[in-house]
Figure 1 (cartoon, rainbow, N blue to C red):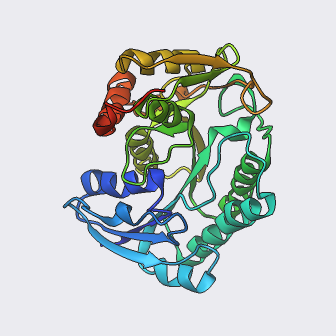
Figure 2 (tube, rainbow, N blue to C red):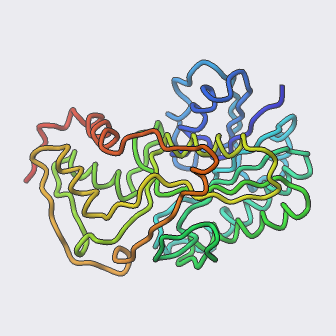
Length: 312
């Protein structure tokens, strides 16, 4: 049976995806290619039964490693990359090298190896502020991170024209617990503030929106898109909701009695609003399965040992 390759399988969404594959693609060999740049070894611990796993310690910029990793693979989930929040402006050259050129390299290697399906985890940040944006909207990315993801999509479009079956999934901002948890996304950051006794901080009025998706729903969306009939090239937005920052903060305070809601001055990196339409993916049969309120409560529970933390 052909194998599945997950690049970046030790990252935040990747650490959930390799577990979701054991449930939704049982019996398959799941190869995990990751350079462990963030030391997320815990992603490889306590893997569920249902799949066989093979870890490859390497980088997507290493063409020789890619060639070995792709032998006998029919489906690639490409998640490896430098992940940042929408308005990050740090390390633009590094982001372009890894996110854009790295994606092109993985795609070229997959095409050469005869991979049947190539699923790319892009981001809704490619659209830029405003919305609600659907897949017909021309992306206007703001900042190096968003530009690198849009550049990666453009590179894959040229490979699709040469015969690679590319499926692009523009994920909303992921939140919720996964083995390689990240706390820089807005929801997880606000939860961590509450759990550690700090004020749940809202910039400005909090009316700015963010497209969200629970990490489990993100993984299921990627697997769902991989299972669709041959498409040649297709792009889908994967979001579950577009709440305001204030709505997010209020839901966290409600789930964590005693948490303090605080407003602070707005800055250029927080005042923009992003809203995305995910109806096209839902039309294919995918639905988010995780309740937002329950997910917030579950993540807070993970920090339950800090319940007596000094809030001063």
